[in-house]
Image (cartoon, rainbow, N blue to C red; front, side, top):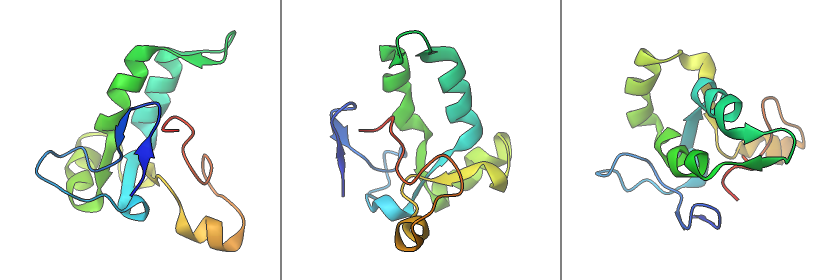
Length: 104
């Protein structure tokens, strides 16, 4: 379990009925997070707008609840783990990093 300083809450599945808090079992939509980045990140100041921080928890889901989002959004290639356990063990990362910096 991890708590986010920026979000001021426990990082868990966005489905209110789901209690999944294992950071290694949580995923986010790469396509939706890219849209959030393009809309709310200021390249001049290197800061996020508060609106993005408020919307970000809705992108986080466990695998069970993520399938519905993927059917309506992008597909399995857009499924990005929040913390990639294999990357930590092997010392490399394949996508946007080992831990998403938006959360912490």
